[in-house]
Length: 280
Ligand code: AMP
Image 1: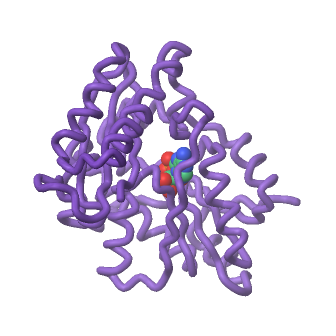
Image 2: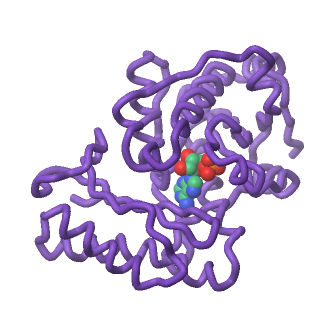
């Protein structure tokens, strides 16, 4: 099957208008892995058409070096999408998404303040803006996101509800490597030593999970449990560990009563990795 690669805004509208039945969109930044493909497969099961998008969105990178170094592998991405039975891929250029004199941004408030938002100023403004634009261009019935980026999911759900965007947000589980490391495009940038150290993030989450299963409900104790595991790995530099309300993402100070999001971020060299689990 031939994949139609669409770059222009007008052309994705034409491709969309041809589609009959329900449409699912899968926004990605490319450098695809099994985690992305799982979203595409789920979208294929639930819709007549799937539009994966590949766009390394400059407005969500607070660090220009990170944007420059972000892995790109378009030929392989298209090969993988062809294999997944996709017929149209939307792959705009930065100029298509942000033409001269662009000046409108979507700001989601409280839920963007903590966690990734606190460490990456402006990140979620860029995410919300580009996702709103992708929704407007592709007019999907469903949009597929990974639990791997838990705060992103909370932000998109908030935006969709607040702006009355007529689609369902579908959240898919985090795919992991055999040693527990959450799949991520950034993993391919790790050195062999860093790659070997990287599962420490998942081990820290599992330690919190085990403590929780053993009856521990104090969020501060769970944060300490995670921190202790992370600092045992000399190559990892902790950005944050968090135990937060699973919906509004406020950091928990009182014993856990409802579902809690345990999440963390750590750097291995210059590569910043994140991961999370839901407790309860
Ligand atoms: P990205 O290309 O990193 O922006 O990711 C595109 C989409 O794939 C987002 O919805 C991510 O949450 C999702 N995703 C990334 N990694 C994984 C993973 N390991 N498992 C499931 N979904 C993922």
